Amino acid sequence: MAETFDIAIVGAGITGCAIARQLARYDLSICVVEAANDIALGASKANGGLVHAGYDPAPGTVKAQVNARGCELYGTWAQELGFPFCRTGSMVLGFNDEDRALLEQLRSNGHVNGVPELSIVGPDRIHELEPRASADATCALWCPSTGFVDPFEVAIAALENAVANGVTFMRSAPVEAIEVAGSDDGAARFTLATPAGNVRCRYLINAAGNGAADISHMAGAEEFQMVWRQGNIVVLDKEPRALMPLYPVPTPVSKGVIVTGTVHGNTVITATAVEREPGDTQTYASDVNALLSGARKLVPDLDTRRVVRAFAGGRPVIQGTNDFFIGQSAVVPGLFQAAGIQSPGVASAPAIAERMELVMREAGVELHERADWNPIRRTPDDFDRAPLARKEELIESDPAWGQIVCRCETVPEAEIVAAIRRQPGAVSVEGVKRRCRAGMGRCQSGFCQSRVVAILARELDCNPSEVLLEDAGSWLVEGPLKGVR
Image (cartoon, rainbow, N blue to C red; front, side):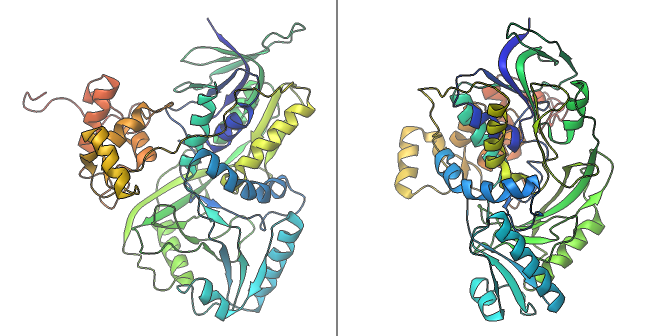
């Protein structure tokens, strides 16, 4: 028996989750359908988390229309949803007269796109703003509105708030077929076939990331192809002070190798841009070396021996265009596309959600605000960052708050349990990691993984051999050793 909703959103990346949160304020039944077993397992996981300001997209593109607005909205979204966001400002470093001319072009683009307070600065101001920036830089585009987030934390926070406002989340539900049937009585027009059960809906939103072309094809809508523009990323150990995002002058296909701090104090070097086979998440020595050498050009004193993790992902690029595709399908009424959301997808997510709401209104979808809509999500307790008085209060309420499981990030057992019990909660080791950072530290879960597996098995009422590292099939434990259970 199929469940019926007003709206189904395919994809629980940052785009789909932001749209779900935006639409949850209205008197509609909404379901988010995700192929993987958790939130943000695609492009939203494998990127540097930069909230780009919006001076880079060509004026007039959809990217340009949503980037600066998305960056502006992040302050409100962070406050309401309780995720960390640092608006540090950024600089694009130039090293010669040719670079300066390109910086002037970026500044002009930014003014047209609505980016505030852009200016070209010289060496003295560069080193006042970021003392570790290269002394060889002769000029820079200073942009006060740039910032950074953890993109999977944004997606998780948005969907938790949406679920608290009545949205349904279906995980492990890859869409295998879509039936489209016209009706005159307002009944569901789309039926999505998934292994987790069928979903019927009146309106369908395609936010499937690198799978967006497949969803569009299954629905009989626009035909397009996705290009897997792979990016390798390197994470360095924590610094005493987070670096301001530093960019090189961009290329036509990439913003180049960027060095940035993170909301948790690490340094990230992001990202290469190479077309590879779809699904390729391997890291390549050539790419990592390019990242390290590019980073040293921007920050010469960066200790690139302090790498704790290298990983890769694929940007969802539509072949033949470097722009976003946001709007109602011209072929299948009732199907709304949010496809090709590559960089600056993280920065644009709140504005993409806002734009999707407008597109649906213009298409005649009735949106009546609910009286009980609550935009606030309480920030989960972060034991490592909590003041001493709050730590003592938590331990007094439950001694498990004093039982440290992850020593690198100071994550206690109770915080891991809370991450599993949240709605939607973690169902894998990496799901725990994304919600409370157990395993994110310099040992990369070398000491705590077995403890996390045991807690997951207990909370999910399963055998440790059934606990997953990430998505389906990624078991960590084969079985008991020497008869010990």
